[in-house]
Image 1 (tube, rainbow, N blue to C red):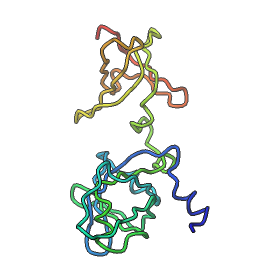
Image 2: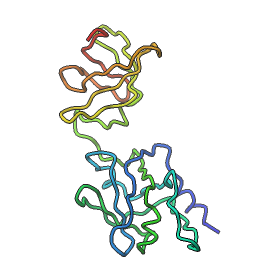
Image 3: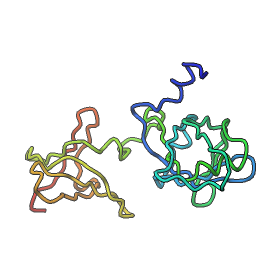
Image 4: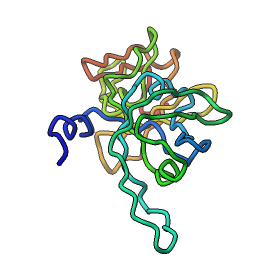
Length: 194
C-alpha cells in the first residue's frame, strides 16, 4: 500500500501549468525527450518535480506485453537543451521501455516554481483572464489567449459583448501602458475602432 504522504506528493498542484509533451525515450537508461510548449522552457529547468498526465490516446502495446503503470510525478535528476527539444533523466525511469511508455504524456509544473520574470516581462499564463481597459476606462474585454507573431505577441480579447468579434492588441509598449497582475488589469492605448 502506498504511503499517504507519497500520494499527496504525486497529486498535481492546483496552480499546475502544462509546459511540455514527452516525445519518447532518449538513450537506453530511461531518459526522456520533451517538446516544450514555450520557446523559452525555463519552467522545465526550474522545477525538480514534473506532474504527468497520460496522453489523450494511448499508444498500442505489443500483443502480450504487460500494461505499464505511468508515474503521476517525475523527480528530475538532470535536464538540458538538446537540439530543438529538452532531454531529462528522472529518479522513476531506469530503462528505455518505461521512458517510451510516456510518449505523448503531458508535463505540468507548479506555477510557483517558475523563475521570477524580469521587470516588464510576464508569463502568458499570468495574463490570461486579466481585464483590459483603455485610457478612457472603457472595458475592452478579457484576455483569453495570446498569439506569438515572431517580433512580439498579440493579446486576444473576448469583448464584454460575447457576440462581438475577438479583439487583437499588439502586446508592445506603444499600446500597453501598464500590466497590474495583482489588480488583474491591463491598461492600453486602444480604441474599439483601432
